[in-house]
Length: 330
Image (cartoon, rainbow, N blue to C red):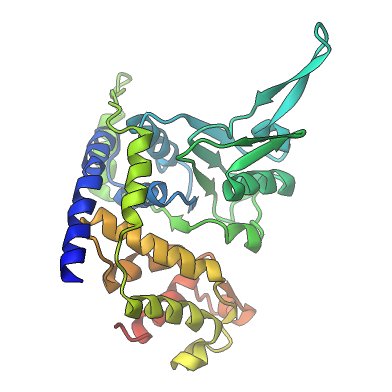
C-alpha cells in the first residue's frame, strides 16, 4: 500500500501543478482572502458549489471573475433581486414573426463559473431554478433539455440575515451547497495595501489565462485515486452522527442544542472535500487535519439549532468545534 500511496502522490503533484500558476495570477489582483480563494479552487476541483456569507466590498466578485479568467472559462454574474424571474437566469423561447418559429435564447446560467450575487434577495422560484441547474447540471427550456458545460461552479453570496431586505434560504436548498464560507474584513496591513492599490484610476491588472478547463477535468480524474483510510471514513461518519445524537458520543453538553443534525450530504461532501484539500497540499492521501480544516465549512449550514441554543448565542461553529474536540481522532 505504501508504494501505491507514493505513486498516487506523484500523480497528484503532476496533476495539481497548475494551482500555483492560478494563485500567482490571482495575487496580481487580490490582497489577502487566501481562505476564500483556496475554498473556491477546492469547489472547482470537486465540481461542487459554494455559498459565501459576507458584507459588501470584500472582493467576492473580483475573486470569482479573476479565477474564471485564469482558466479560460466563461464567467457570468447574476444580481438577484425580488423581481427576478426564473426565465431571466435560465433563458426563454422567443417568437420570430417572420418565420413563425420559436428560437431559444439561453440565459446567463449557460457559463462555466457563475456568481449568484445576493441569492437571499430572490424569490423562491428563482432560487429553486438555480439550485435545480446546480444539482442536475442541465437546464430545460420548454421541451428541450440542455447539458451545462463542465466545469460548472456556482458561488452564491448572501448578506448576513440581519441586513435589511434579506431572508433566510430554505434549509433544504442550503444543504445542496458543499461549503458555506464566512468572509470577514481584511487585516490592518492588508487593507492598507488595498487602499494603495486602489488609489490610482489605472489600477487594472492583466490576468493571463494559465489553465484550460480540460486541465480541471483531468485533475478531477486524478482526485479519484486519492487514498482515504477506512478509519478516517469512520471518523467522518462519527462526526456527522454526533450532530444527530450527541449523547451517543459523550457530548451531553450539546443535548438540547441541536434541533436537526447534518444530512447524509455532509458525509459525502466532507469525504470529497477532504480529498480535494489533500490534493491541494500535494498529498495522495487524506489525514485527520484535512477533515478538521474543512469540517466547519461543510457542516455549519447543515446544523439547525434549537431556540435554547440561539437564546444563549451559541453558534454552529462552536458546536462543530466541540464535536471535533471530543470525537477521538484515529
